[in-house]
Length: 271
Image (tube, rainbow, N blue to C red):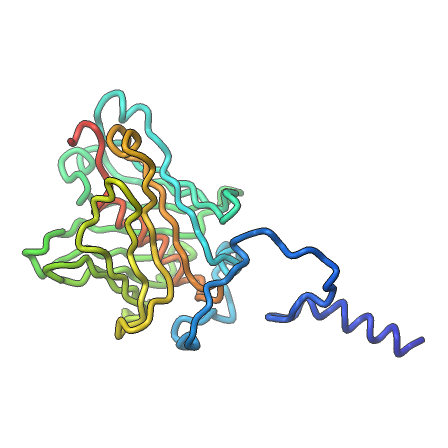
């Protein structure tokens, strides 16, 4: 009897062990597509494997291999033809909101610096706690200028720098590097030559440093001709391995915001 109880206890604990299969094969498989992890043919380098201690508020990111970012439509900006502060909902693969991001910038910067404006994006969880801060300084954005290019600083929690997203000069393709807190390169992001996305999705591939292996992608989803022309509301999807470090996932969320500003931020007034 004691042997049977011990066996049941071990069976109950199995489901809590990292990577352990579900011991009860009678349970139906989950239909959540977010549970289908991006499989790699090579092991992930230790530089962007999950850390032992997760920044507070980012625990939920450790379970996700798909992060959806939806920009909210600003009706006031549509009516007046002005640029308002951006707001984004960050969701899981089921469409459930996990974070909310709001831009902080002054009206002068939005009006005269437009998409190059300096700003801070504050990301809060559903309880209103700020968990990620993204700082964007005023920088250049031109294939003819190889210096002082775009850069983001990622803090998680606020006040603790965990990474950077930096633009790398290239005359043909948009290229970016994700760096850790010590500004050491971790991953590269390579976009397409044409990023207008008029009639289809635009994919930015996430690659290893040598660009030989693609481990994920950041996609700007096409939302239809009318929505693209008459609003500046964009939708993005981040496809990454589920076991990617949460601080790198946070940096990729920041990269989505940067791509939105650089390539997709427009409105009817600016056409």
